[in-house]
Length: 632
Image (cartoon, rainbow, N blue to C red):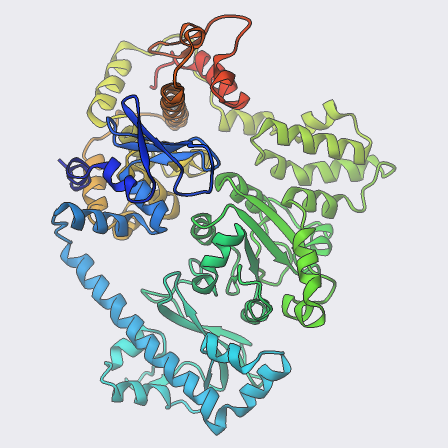
């Protein structure tokens, strides 16, 4: 029995959930108001027999006891594991290497906190910091905000901070590891930040991880960040997230800007749902962190660099960022892909020409609110930006070039209704027949064949079928899917379309998420703590039968379909159980088989009677034709 299974066995999910909402018996299950959103009618169910829960209301999500604690407390899996293990009286037996890494990270946080205090004191109280304070005053930053964000000043000397920290008994090697100083060839060290206004950068929990420093003279670069350390990774951190978390939850929206000053100005004006990247393109890790707080994102883009002009210069949408300047925007194709993967709505706030967010705020605070209210969805913004010079009376060559440029964007739209909406919109704008435009925007035959490999006619051989059955029997469907991923890095792109929520076991779900964010199995093992590392090794201990790349793609698609089918079956069954009482007609019109969900009867639709949306019914009907195909 794994550690996670032991915890589940020792804890009662009904008892855990009952601490956050009042539950009532409903058949063999329990029902109550959802603890994650306000509602008047109970849509939240707990299923003791399988140790799970599901909200059929606005959340439309569920999971096991770990998923509940993670969502309720807004914490990571490892933190939920520790909390529940302590409650269950289960010893986690941390790996010695993990303990050492945790101690190192804690020491670096303490060291950075000491540096924050030192730099902040120089800015507010020392004569040397007056020029930096004057600069902030000219930018409209109040002293209260300076104190609130604990902004700091690094003096021009090479030897100010590190002697102070060494006097506090921090080891010299640790000061270098934290990125606060650099080591010279002779073994001596010098401070990294000199004559700079400093912005302390904290992780989502508020622990100081590093600094961003703006030069107050002609020094280059203009902005200098702490180098990568065990606690500072600018591709994962967002400036201001620790301060914005509650506002993001409350507003159900996160606004993403480019710079430190933008965050400070917008927060000072009362819009506290704002965070910033740090001179790098927006990454999936950053967006995944925001996804835990909201699924509504607004990208505040510089109209000069990231919006219309750079796009219209012919920058390749699929492979390049927009413009030479590094902005907080990934490729447009990437933005749309993030929107799909995260199941989020991403909007674009196009800033007035030549203005940054802090300048907009200083001119007119209400204008910022107007820009937020009118920010269009990302695809609407892109279509307007790309098609602004290609109208219905344009040359056919220009229309063809535009369609080629848009094809990667449309390739990322998997929802047929959205595809139809944007195809119709573009058709009207270009004056091109919708049917022809739809064909032109579809992936090429070669690309379609690569992404949707077809199986040769005939049933798989008995040998392959037996090997497949034995493997799934040994591993289980979720672990088999993970094994395919671990053995096939080329599945990364395909895996973007597989929601992690389909993995009901929290260990499998977390491993799948980590695999998506790491480059190889060794990196995954380094990132995984106990018992994730133990579970990873157990999956790797079962080698897969030999498969060609095409068959691995096909196997992964089939495994994903089966995960989806299982999820829909259980959701359907839970909805059926939630009906009190279930009508006889509904029971007669709905039956389950081993391979598909069968609907009978012409006049009634039991799925709609149970409140299931039309898309669910379509997925089940599509699955019916695929469910008998064997995974190779």
